[in-house]
Length: 388
Image 1 (cartoon, rainbow, N blue to C red):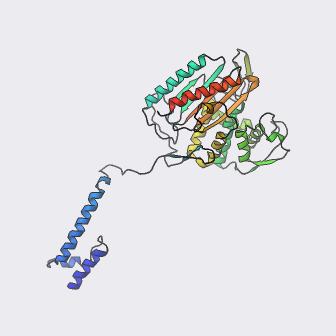
Image 2: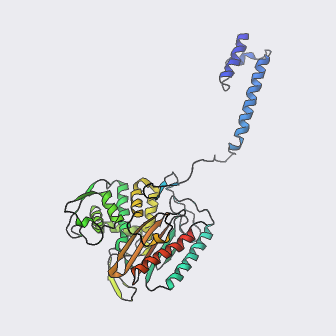
Image 3: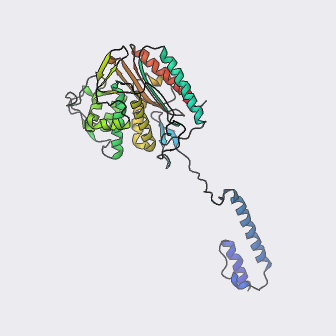
């Protein structure tokens, strides 16, 4: 019997969760004091364990709380652009809306203040914008969207303007959707065709590819980078050709936002009251929607779209929206300018603590005055949207 008693104590000593096989034989026998003390110690330890775990045990019908964090944002070391870290919840759309406010953008942290207060601040910023425009001579189209709440302020947002190079944001976003789908490889080679566009790729104006020899090769990624960073016209045409031509791209542009069809001729009055007609027009609503769509895709697939965001943050054009934003805040933007039509456009994603999209399209006699106006409007909306 002493051997059995010793075995029982040793058994509990190794793993108190495993009962001794001899325990059932001990019924009716006098208990050894050492065995009783061992049982008391075990019960005391179990009581302490239960007491410590009590706050974390779910009540009936209550789901255990998760420690998983929401979406995170890091800074890209090369550009300072924020890089989202995808989480399982980032691709879900929030269905609940407040009043006429649009649904929150995919993958954005929830608002930290009362949504109604944010809308009031957006409306007040709009009043300041209107007061600023009242003192200007020109024609203007504005679209601003808070990317956390979906709140929108817009003015003359569907009026047609010459798109100029701002449309390159939409074209390159479409390119990256094809990269994401596996239809285009970022490292595949493209050859420059120096015949005039649309037969070839040549188009005068901004860019350096126009000076290369016919047949010069570069990757899709390199070509897209030049299209955005230095607004290379030939590089953009090479991208367009790779995607099947502008008429193959236009349905995508129209699907994202087609208030003004880029490929259809439209007639309107310019800022001087003169009648204008032509294709390749767009509006602030359309360009702003392309920026929102890019942001959504970037949030859902950071690794795929980060190069495009980086390029937009590294454009060589330092005027426009970004001049109204603190230098420490990255702005992923694409300007567009056409002196023949007095068109000065800028559309961008302001990657602040509370990110937002802003598009300002202008027709004014002075390009410099237009750039200053874009910066002033950006400062107004930045101050309204950012937390105090």
